[in-house]
Structure formats: C-alpha cells, structure tokens
Length: 112
Length: 118
Image 1: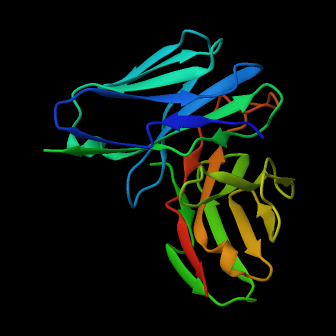
Image 2 (image 1 turned 180 degrees about the horizontal axis):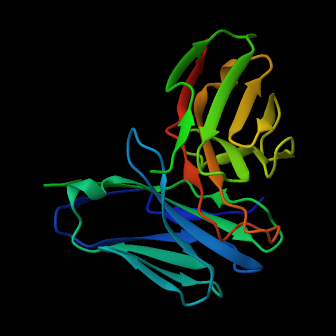
C-alpha cells in the first residue's frame, strides 16, 4: 500500500496571509501527482496534474511545485481569501499502478 | 458545464438492506470510480471501471459490487448493508487517453452521497 502523507492536517490563517502545505509520496517509480480542492458541500475539483520533476503550475493565486526525486509537492496560496477555505487533497499514481492513492488532506480555514 | 451526478445526497438504510448508489456522467468518459471518504482517512477506492461491463477492484472492494451497463452510468451496490459501511461515497469519472494508463487525466467528482446504515 502506497503511503501519501499531507501536512499539516489543518491550518487556520487570516485573510491576506500566504500559506503552503506539503504532500509526500514514494520517490520511486513516480508517474503523476494530482491536487484537488474540496469545498464543503461541493464536489472535489482538480487544481493541477503534475508529471515532471521540477514542474511548477499556477492557477490564479494558487501554485504548486513538484520534486519527484525526493518525493514531495508543495501547494502555495498567496494572499489567502475566505473563498480559499477548503480541504486540499493530493493524490499519487506510481508507474506500476492504475489508480490514484489519496492523502488525507489539509483543511484550510481563512478568516477575515 | 461538465457534470457528475449522484442519485442521492443523503441516504439512511437499515442493516441487511440492499443499497444502490447511482452515478451518471455527461462527459462521455470511459473511466468511472467509486470512493469512500471516512474521517482521518483519505479517499479510498472501492471499484473502478474503464469501459462498459468492465470493472476492477480497488483497495476496499469487500461488501460491495458494481455495475456498468451503459457508458454514462456506474452503480455501486451494497449487497447487505452493515453499519461499518456508513460513510460518504463519491463517484468520479475521467477521460481515457488510450495509453492504458490514465494518471495524467484529472478526475471529475460528483457531490457525494452520505450514507448512514442503522
């Protein structure tokens, strides 16, 4: 069973703060790493699919980096807003698997 | 607007009942998935399907079966519901890029069904 870990488990920041969280995954046999945002009472939505070591992706104020050699990805949110409040999930797929393995998520709460 | 819909948002059933959870997607996706979400655990894959009438077991298939008679519809069946199947169930779909490996393709999720088994 693959181990995908996310930290911190939860995070509480003020509006305007920048924040980041970590996803750790096995460094061998990497294939792809997904990030999803899951707002309360809504469906999880994909943010990024990352496939290459050194990948950096950006969507608005959210960006992500990938280091496949050491087995981690960072998700950054610049200038957090209340609408960023959600659980952020990462999911890993190895070269030998045909399915995603999800981490337990980082729950972000942004207050005014 | 692409959509994955699930038949119920909330469902309450009794132990021993047969339960059907339905999922429909309108994106013509080949792949469909059923997950469950429990507190402190990540999304865990129950079953997935990469084509009509095809299915593969995920990480936790025990106590569940699935049916995919049409491309757009993927059903999860609890043959005899038990209290440890109380959970949030999420359906997802993704495009098949034809490589036999689909890790590059994002998954689109439904809103979830919160099932309580009494």
